[in-house]
Length: 237
Image (cartoon, rainbow, N blue to C red):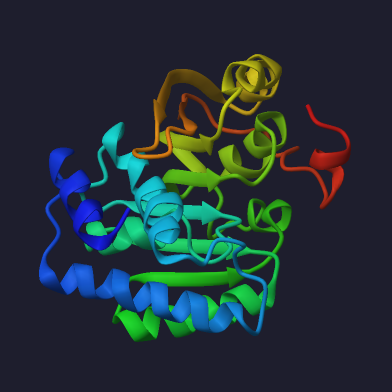
């Protein structure tokens, strides 16, 4: 997917990008590839693949949920900024936070935000289990995003404590999401969530399968969660 195909594909979904936004994506690509020579940010570096598998794929969540308002989102384990930074470029009114356990990624994200002139973005070097217990962040976000981080029973414990009541936790997955949803039902309910929607689609051109799982927060999460760092992964709910 080249830049023109990228812009046209988003236009078909009702997302119209300006020349300034397109230049931000171009700068994002250049900085990603440049920094990737010094640190492992992504295995995908070929331009057309970045535009498809990182940029377009990240924005695809907006095909199924409204990101057009001034809402607070937090991206758990965003790595090189996916999906939240592409969403921020498309929807400048978003207030974006990213939490990641590797400080080198946070260093990259700070440089990226400066290069792209992004405002209302915050980056936190922390474990999600600790971040979710921080009163400044716990149940403070309209939307919590996670893309290719962990299986749903683990992700639910990391993400749902950050979602405010009546907000949403959105997990972006590849193929096989139905099995994960079934495995995660207990954890989702225990943590105050309710499985609302599951959308499946295929990326343009290469036809690889993607899933968007949207879970609504219907009640507050017990103070028992998240458990201490490492426990959710070792002992999923």
